[in-house]
Image 1 (cartoon, one colour):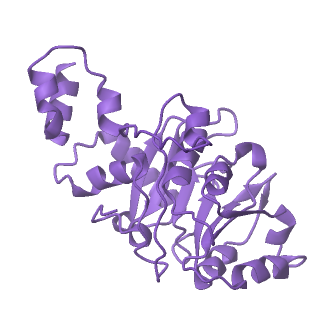
Image 2 (cartoon, rainbow, N blue to C red):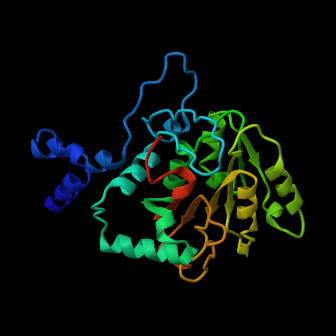
Image 3 (cartoon, rainbow, N blue to C red):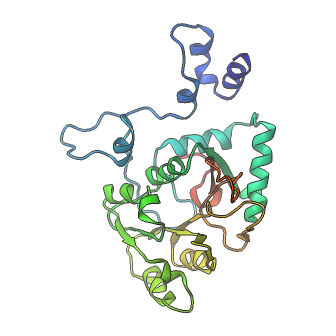
Length: 279
């Protein structure tokens, strides 16, 4: 307990009074990553997607239209708060197991440490919801997904913010069959930039598809989330150095016999200006 208190005091000095002066017991987990709930407006008729998953939460705000794919601002959210603290705190009190897991995941993906921030979440659902509540969806942009509907916790956030949701079949990933349809959606006209978020799995029932789609989406002003949680880290290596998705999901200790519950979320610094932490 003393170690935890020292850790929080060093990394989050704003909470020093609560820990030193005593009083009611403090939930350290909530202090570190839970955002403050905001009061909904009286005329709000529908709840945010996170409120349907949790009892209390803040309603994500709408993002502004930005001219470039790079330096897009994430909306105020738990993810933005975590990224800001992780990138701005110089001491970085990272445990050796966390460093080892981070290096293992980055090596597995073929991605450089200086370009990505690595976060660990208790499960796949929590990682997806961090992305869904923070991505700047708004009326006029898109969310195109090939992730199975039962595993896709982002589409509800996109719908809530009036972004157009496009559910694409996995056959569109096959370059030999219907790839042109996916290309047409990437190139479709949109007054906004970025056009939206494209989510795709790295593996579908044992079939590995080309990472060409990541680069093509980027060329047409789309952000990309790559779901690689179905692959075994250390065996099914990914070579993402040339493609650099904006978000990557994977499981650091995943094996065929014992699937991992912990999910790793990689966020590309350049895409979301994560080094400054500005919103």
